Image 1: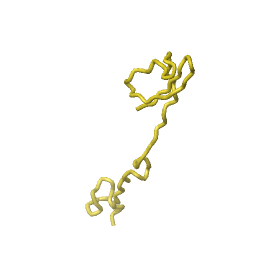
Image 2 (image 1 turned 180 degrees about the horizontal axis):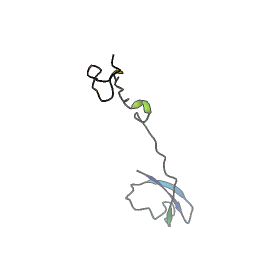
Image 3 (image 1 turned 45 degrees about the vertical axis):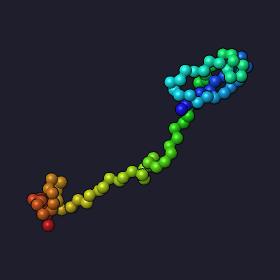
Length: 86
């Protein structure tokens, strides 16, 4: 749940309240009961917790060894018709 900051227009009381995003903004000061305004905050930063956010956490792509004597279009060196086959 986000935390919203409020300030009283009369007594200048400054306070924070955790509210759901769909909740109506508060309208009365808890100290004097007069009108308040919701302040625009900078918001919270993104916090990455737990595994999975590092390059070392991901599966590496397998690099299959290719037969150097086979050409790109042949499945193996045994069936390759290229002239440089030994």
